[in-house]
Length: 288
Image (cartoon, rainbow, N blue to C red; front, side):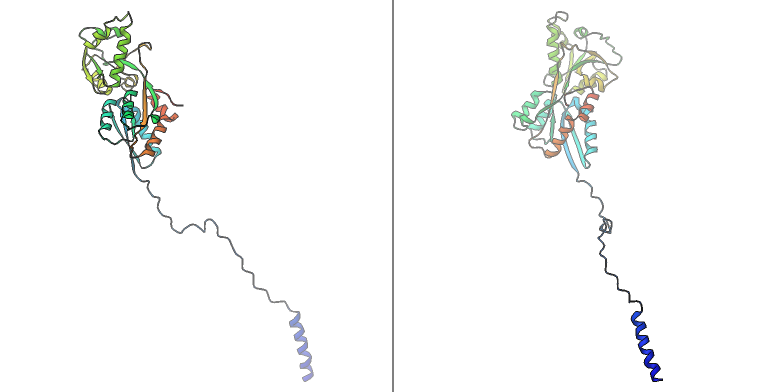
């Protein structure tokens, strides 16, 4: 019995030695974090853009075009509000020189922009022409005075409304009358006769349009763009040899509260998109 036990023990030892080896524990694997796994578990809400205001002082004749440009600019600049002050260029210059804060000034002529340059409120090298304009005669829709030609403007008893001589459009109108008076077909006293029919000199060109629309005048001289903005009025074209080319400059104010926005607004006005809006409202673009 002892002998059998001795024989069994070596055999069992041999079987154990020849049996399957114990499986090794798997080596740890390092997995790089994915882009998704690195996202925070909760995202902060999108922060609303800081509200900012841009103030633009612009000639009254720019009202319709600049309102559209302002809407486009606001859409492209979230948080920005464009505030306009439309009036005769001479009134705007007075307001600015008396301390009114503005970021941008758009004038209907160079003389009023030059006034701000002389006052040290605009740098001369920043003023840029952004459009040109010309003049046209406007008449009420039903034309009660039966004005058919430019010569009719000198007819006694006619009621004419112009911009005041200090208003760019009023000054341009008088230049046109000067040119006509040099032509024999109108006569040397043409300007004198027309001015004798003037019943009101307005502070901006939009007031001239309003007086004609209300039937308070038989005729007025305004910009072509004003005639397009009031399609219910009749118009008489002024030939190019008598007409003027009004150049409109635009510039940022030296003391602009929002100088960066001022530069961006001017850049938009001069861009193809801004120039397209101006053309739509009857102005002649000067941009690329």
